[in-house]
Image (cartoon, rainbow, N blue to C red):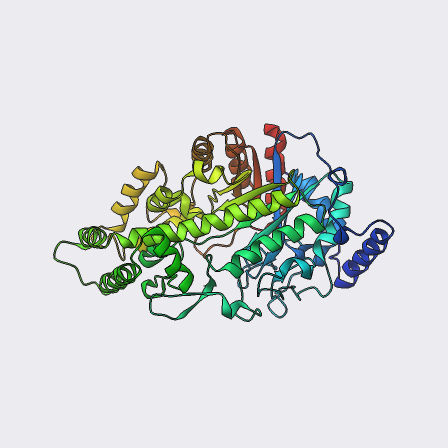
Length: 508
């Protein structure tokens, strides 16, 4: 059994800010990274067979120090690529451990709830944001810290690649957000940003252009876990809320796009309002005479605009993805752009049908495909619970799970066992192969490996053996690389060591 070395003294904020100041002073002797496009020769293009990446946020470097974190990631995890969270207002990619869950055996051992805010953890250069109302996004969490300026020099000395992870998660208090929010089915402002709003699209292209022009990064990983109005209305995901009356978006920009696509806006809105009534009746246990599923199909036949509106959402989302990639390539053609493919793509056949891997592969240099297996059991059961409350309310949950598993190609535990058992390493292998087959060689596939993602009290917690098996399964399936997920500040060191051991065994 591997013996874990004792954890050294945790770096204080004073330690970190001192090292950051030293880095800033050293870089002042050379041309400033933020002042000009970075030359290609400033980046290292190491000869490596596979990308072994990890998602890591600014707080880990602030808590532990840059050099110590990089030592840990390389020595334990065999990491050669950092997916550094540079923009998000969400806790999935940034911040310390999620409140209420145990802290890992490194980093600060107290919650950051008092100061966590989120935003842009690098320095926004104003000239890039002149075309959007979203101008003031600087993260205040760590004072004047610019995480790219602090980490890039040390990463370069070690031959590490650095990608900017940007996530579509926002706070309602961000200046300008109120002007670009989605509008729901009944005319209310939502909490999400409209992907067809020109200021939102301009922001995303501005952000990635800023990163790729102002810093010597290797590219961008873009996160957008938005499922569309139809799946949101049905609760057809692992999220625990079903809010059919809050589906989006019905703003002026969507109305205009609908006219251009020949979609009847009023019929679409009426169709979603009628669907809202059906969902609410299902949640109240009111069974239609022909059953819940037949009534849903009948509704789609009577209101084909429901599917057309859902496809309009997808078109807007994919337009943003394409524009992000185009902006990065315009800034520096040699950089790479990847997209995070959310977990629902794995266990929802409706979502699978509307998101083709080969289509997504044409918009990306790589896809980070979520194959989280330990938390996957809990998530798959939540998905079944939601469908069993709406679309398939007539079907017992155990039978529904077996039926779905046949459709999806799963060979996993039963409904009552899955949260505690998680999904198997074979699930990781199968989903990796499915992504590779779907992408058809048009881009690289990097499975996202679950290391310590928080789960419920009775649900599976990843052991080092679990992590080792999942990493081996993905690499043996032919993955072009891996991304350890969700963030280093959730991961236990023994699990990271197990991941690195598997990489070295398989020859990643």
